[in-house]
Length: 451
Image 1: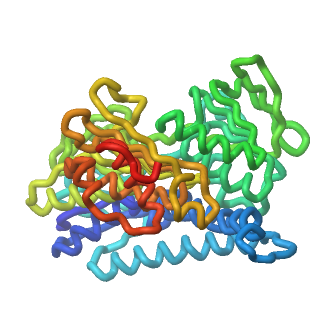
Image 2: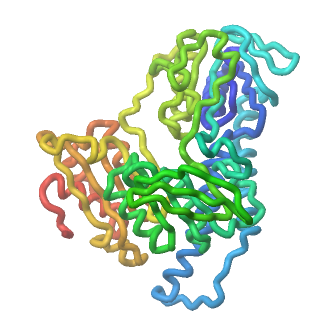
Image 3: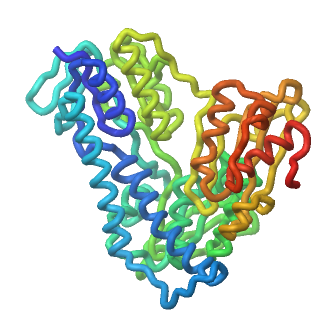
């Protein structure tokens, strides 16, 4: 009898299994493919490996002369870039496998079927368990007209390419679309983005999207917002796309078409037959329990916040509850990070979602930051949203280099109800990019010193 069987070894599943193993529980982790799930194998990790190569290339090409570094004949080797990506993925997998072995988690390769609230089948073996954690993840959405054609790419397919495309049209200007547009355009591949909403990165504020769009356009990216692809057909060496824009219908031809319009929860028929409640994804309470109390669900399969770091913490919460500890998820301070160029990170409330009469907002430009000048960066800002009366920090957005690391100051502030005054009274190191955040905080409290 197992204390828990975890189905799916992605970021939520393996973290839950390790946490249970650390607490001495008997755990089995079932995975039909590679440990690490989408994030490690077809998502976060390989994307950032590719973007690291692209970022270094752009830094050399765009900044070396101004910084006094003489570099001749700069070029890139896509085979070597891909080898780097594959090495990083392999090392990440091995790291997870090491943790599972260290904490005595039994890793079972195969496809799991849940036969009852305490029985899981893998091939011809039955595993009896006190608890089950569903962490089966998600898969890329394919909607009409894209579901009727072979040869179109989803984000999963990009990582299997043997050579760079001659050109690419990306359907969807969200996080995935913008990150791939950043990669391809940096390597001088012609890119077109078609976004249905008013602006790219639609979950972020418009001023954020404008900074990212400006950089992409500098690299030659065509961006069509408030637009949609209404037809796709194969042509010689690619696809012809009919795009409906606010100004009328246009046609664009691209060697490859990447569909990045979101992901859908991966829910098996066995779970539906079991009577687990489903609302877009598997419905849970904040303890991660489904309507069957000893069956938990975490990560993308819930169809809510589809982020690896959210899945990881949901795994921790599920594990704690299985161990008898009262734990609940708090989604008030979930950071969003986008590895565009410049990077984007946000937490808490956005400007577009608040009542301006009840809050104070201040943005501090990257161009006024001393450290940014030393590294030839000027596009970006830090924005703080605070309660008008108490100055409690309600949200933070950062656009610029290292934004994805610096956002933790905002996460801690929002999660713990800190005020802008408390952050202002915390000495920020000089000269650093974090002083851009300080400038925004000062602007909320009174006036920024360096503006």
